[in-house]
Image 1 (cartoon, rainbow, N blue to C red):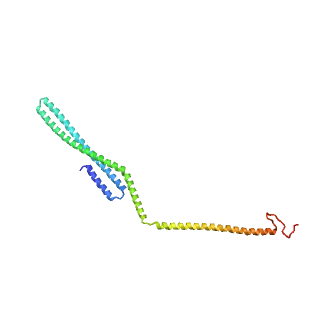
Image 2 (cartoon, one colour):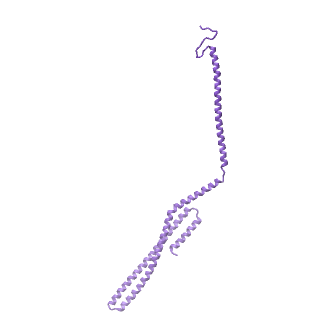
Length: 235
């Protein structure tokens, strides 16, 4: 199992444990993101080591290739100087270096494939982390909205268990009674006012009659002029 596979397995285990145990999704998301960040850091370290190993293989391959070329040159030099045995020895060493170079080349190719796969996995993990970071606030907001909806639903359910119609009817009856009392008081005030007016008229009639009698006794004529009462003489 590769390093990224192991990291992914551990990360999934931690996430599942958090989801099973924790109650606050905000804390869970924060912990998950922290674990992902740590996993990415570990993965980067491992990828860097694999790349370093790749460079070592490449260096060893190139070194052996250079040695093989050098011993090939020496074989040509020895053969040109008439030393066939020395040329053979140089060629034997060339063959050894060629074999070493070929072995390092195969290891380099395999290592390059591993590094390519690790880089791809690391990029995928980084993409998931970036996406989780972008969606964190949205997920928290969705959770808060869901909690609010649950509270509203619970309150609505509690209210539905209470029948407010009887209380409302009682309040309506009380209000109607107060309205009737107010109307009755207004009607009584108007009735009393009308009676007062008639009483005033009656009072005015009596006063007018007495005033007329008084004027007659005093000989005051209509219009306010004073005359002589019958049986009296003016001086």
